[in-house]
Image 1 (cartoon, one colour):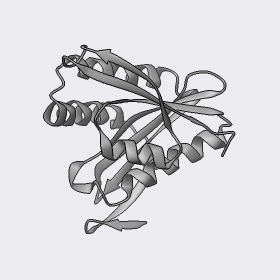
Image 2: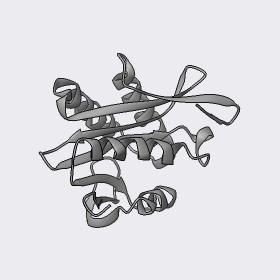
Image 3: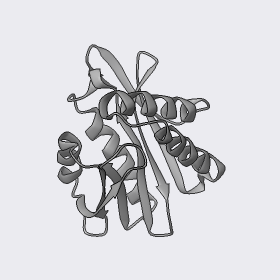
Image 4: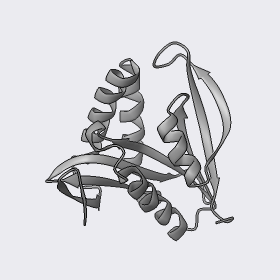
Length: 166
């Protein structure tokens, strides 16, 4: 158990109610921090529902401090060899204390255990702290796509990591 920001931090796998909470927090924070509109809520909810319908190739973890979820991350298998990192969020007051690194390590350890050879994630351009974290684990940007789905002019980026080279 780690101690960050004055509380005990535990990381656990998903339990009932977490998926709805993950969607809620993503929508609130992404609207506040990046100005994304309501279609982002549907996107997050749809992806979580698909995960819940076929959990066999994935897992979600929640970090808690004093019983409150303060961070999440998920992995979903997209094919036999490839996994997607999803729903990665750290509450603002817990950022910068190593929790993102802890959750990323948990997710990538799971990917190695499941023998995925490639992991990818989608992010938005301009998230420098996230870029630094992804790069420190060996992810590299491989694709950029302009999207007006959630906000005009958003540049989405796909980052990939080859696990067999680790």
